[in-house]
Length: 305
Image (cartoon, rainbow, N blue to C red; front, side, top):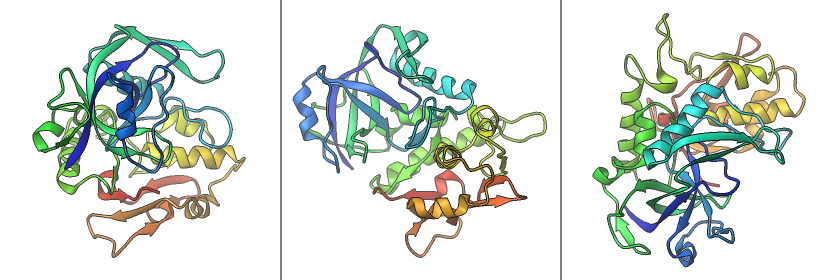
């Protein structure tokens, strides 16, 4: 697939709070942001910085506010491990976290050095204006500002593949990513799930994975998902928003999901005949307060809105 290649550097100078799937990037030539397509053009800072979201990767939330209420995060150990893994893969070291006094619940991250060279391969932005991309380190495989035909081998050399292969992020795919590239990333995630498992797929003494998305997470309040269960970040975000509205039970959660308009197709084991709207199609509430998904993340293909 042709993707736009942009050479530059990943920056941790100033007030930055990257996580395991999003971090700031500055092109060597800032004008190349104008070449990026999508529903919203990137809006670089004065320094030329734009947040880059890793294609196909969804790491645990470390500072999610959504549209309701205060900032919340998923269980710290794996969330911080994902952030560290991404930054260390790129070449950062001595990673430090300091609470942001202006934004409760958010931590600014610094490291040595404060920037490392790298490149991105992008097919455009998302609805938030973030540049969705494959992330590479070091010298780029082509000329900056031009499209490059991205094949399997190159995908395997990206941070996206690394994060999924280490089990420190969930696969979450959108329709714009071609099937062949998507399957390379899905394969990395599936291998991370195998015994003994890595990251969120690590198995406990009873043989159960840390991830509770498919087996179910008992949710009684916000701490159930911020300090307790590890679940797919997309499901965490919907639960966080729902609970922030003041709900004390999950009785209305399916209806809330139905109104949220997440659009997707089911790929496996039985493909859906068409596009489904609302995660209530693949999320169940059982036994009064246990939330689970009926399909694994890699079996869903979301549609950009």
